[in-house]
Image (cartoon, rainbow, N blue to C red; front, side, top):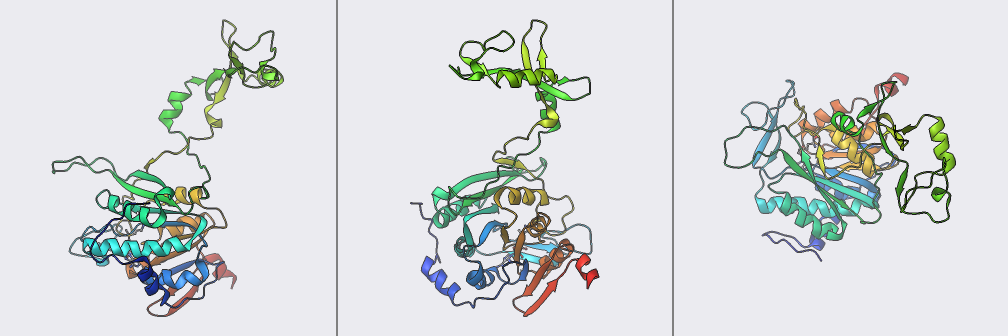
Length: 380
Ligand SMILES: C[S@@+](CC[C@H](N)C(=O)[O-])C[C@H]1O[C@@H](n2cnc3c(N)ncnc32)[C@H](O)[C@@H]1O
């Protein structure tokens, strides 16, 4: 049972669903992708008929209760935040209580949309993130909490206040069901420094490699890996890593290195390394020249999508901003649904999605258009 976090204006779950249920359900084609302009509470409510329990992956990067107005200047190459000129992209100026409730109401709807194998990643900063963690525990269950990922977002900065520089934000990762969520065990390549450190030898063809013993801990009493190979038994308490036949085959292929004292070791090559398991500190720096305020790195989104969704999955981002999640999902062949209520966000997204197929809906103005890729347009 999660601890509850109380504040003025906190609604009961039933009350939230009562409001949501009054919103008319819309028709969607589940096989297609959508970019929707509108308030996400309304849009998510309207999706319940078709998408309840159907979304495998949700990534959201909502406003962070910064009390700032984010401005954007799309005619320039970069974006201005909280400055005099530029058009307002979005305002982040709710009171703390209003903000908590704003996020909480949407999280209840998102939980309903998640499939049984689904996951949600919520991107937030270090100031407000711990409160949001408690809200997420309430909604998704503390037992479904997976990780609090620290994302290194920038290079170290100089600053004047009496505190440490803030280089990270947090991504809270929950599953709908902790033991069922899609998780593809994606590994990442070693860095150049790691390659040089771990593979410190170079062979005649210029390939970096290291060597490991031909035996490993644990004795095999009767099996092949405890048997005789080249007149030797494995040392006491150990067994051959491979059967004697396989070791001979490796030796004949030149994949075993013999020391001057006759000690054999197996060669492992850097270019055959399968990559390393990912831990909970990630480095994906924000774009240097963002097209939209608070725009996130596309590779970050690609990694999350590859890890927590499959080709046939639907990916949802209901604070989609400039459409980073949608572009990443489209490039990875997933269906996507993006929602944002800012004209500037929608404009930036349409530019990013130039090569994607999707339907555009403007909930307030009733506009609906099918957007085809340039290749498809040429075929008409
Ligand atoms: C932090 S930005 C997202 C940036 C995005 N991750 C990117 O890479 O461009 C948050 C977005 O939430 C949108 N937003 C805020 N309140 C909303 C609401 N009620 N409904 C839909 N979108 C909303 C804002 O317009 C803004 O674009």
